[in-house]
Image (cartoon, rainbow, N blue to C red; front, side, top):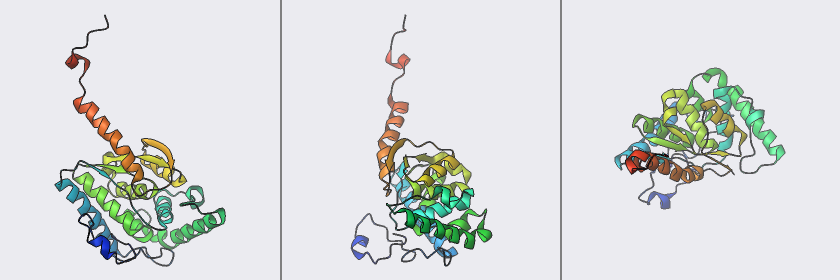
Length: 243
């Protein structure tokens, strides 16, 4: 937890739960920066800590996802800020809003970009701070740290890929450690993967994120690793020539 707007005392007692709340909810990016500089750095550090913990447990691959409210708006704003794409071209329907609500969503993104982009264009950390979310910052930090530790990362849908977009803008070499799990229904997700020059493993028209696509793709990655490391070649297996 880096930003859930709740005390969540019952969750804090779970042995696998990391209570790293930076603040209760990301700020309104239309009115002010989504996070202060201190807050975005704390969220990045929280995500990096997760990668270090998994590495200490001998983990090799991270499957990353998130839970957040309204974060398709923030993710799309990040996409537009990094790539220069028009909000009207890549803004989707999120969890199922209607056409009129989508128009308001586009207007919100346009207002946020007009407010912050002149000062932060070309600076991925500033873009994340002003337009992102605490959960997106945490995932960004996790990806950066995982790559530094030599771990592979299965990225999920639109929100998670927006973190990958920022992580790769900060350090392009991170891209080589990322595996895109699936292509979601959100138009912005396809634009993000195209910008990163990535091809997703699965095309299931998924809308829900929360790591679901990353987990579904994990057995494919495991199977590929086993084929490379455990399957015998024809010569090793003593298979005869076709003659």
